[in-house]
Length: 111
Ligand code: SF4
Ligand code: SF4
Image 1 (tube, helix red, strand yellow):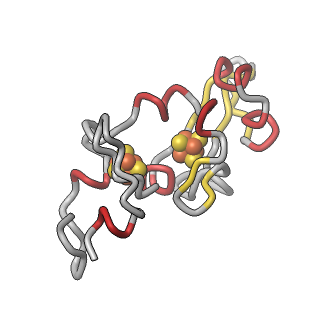
Image 2 (image 1 turned 135 degrees about the vertical axis):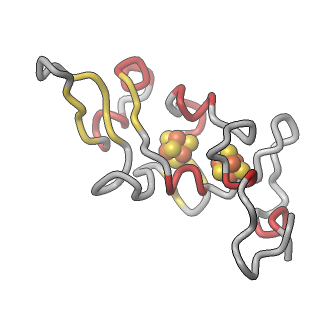
């Protein structure tokens, strides 16, 4: 089975995202205050991030500690997709950290 089949064939027709969810599981995920204003669940479920003056500057979305999956990831699906943070909107296969740009893991088919 290749990557496209594993993701249910839901490859984004516009940017080629495989919807594997690996970016949502492996990157440091910081939403800003505008993101939280647009989507109130970010403030409810994220961990507050403070600036040098101890003022609130945003929210960490990784569960528990950095490099643990996003609190909004359910399987490979984002439960706040229409109102996800701008960093998520901007991220895609053109980013060098995208999993589909990395060599396949041992035993993994090329998609
Ligand atoms: S942007 Fe890349 S890592 Fe993120 S879901 Fe799409 S293919 Fe996977
Ligand atoms: S908010 Fe959604 S798209 Fe952004 S990292 Fe979390 S699960 Fe992924």
